[in-house]
Image 1 (tube, rainbow, N blue to C red):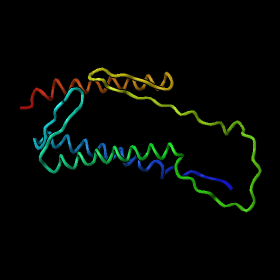
Image 2 (image 1 turned 45 degrees about the vertical axis):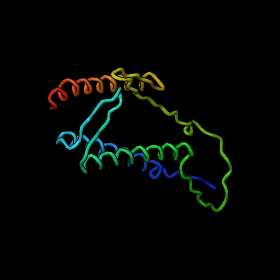
Image 3 (image 1 turned 120 degrees about the horizontal axis):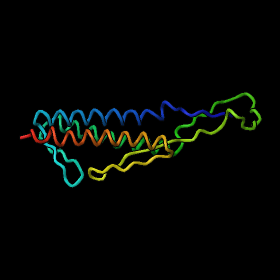
Image 4 (image 1 turned 90 degrees about the vertical axis):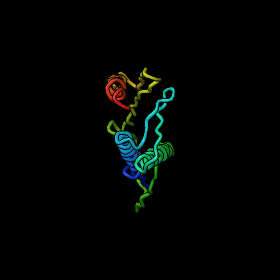
Length: 153
């Protein structure tokens, strides 16, 4: 009896989470830009206060993204959905050949503690990529604080 994982199904919550997060941030940004909501920075946490429907929709989309993100991590931790395929005769187990080597997962990330980025990764290539991402995000953050916020009333 062979098994195959439904990979597109496993990726669906992660893609929905990403789409919800991007749409929520876009709605919140637009809401702040038109003056319907206000953006505050409490310690290192961004806080949005608003009274309009765009701000509410943006917050709901970000919350949905967090929920879907946790769901996608839970499903990947449990191994996803596995569907059994029926075969006429069971095939004998074969020894793993050179083409059946397990893939090594690479990961990395950037964590901001205030304005200071902390970079981590599973190997040097991923860490360097995260470092470039951290520098770009820091430049965008500084540009936002020095160019956009002083113009706000």
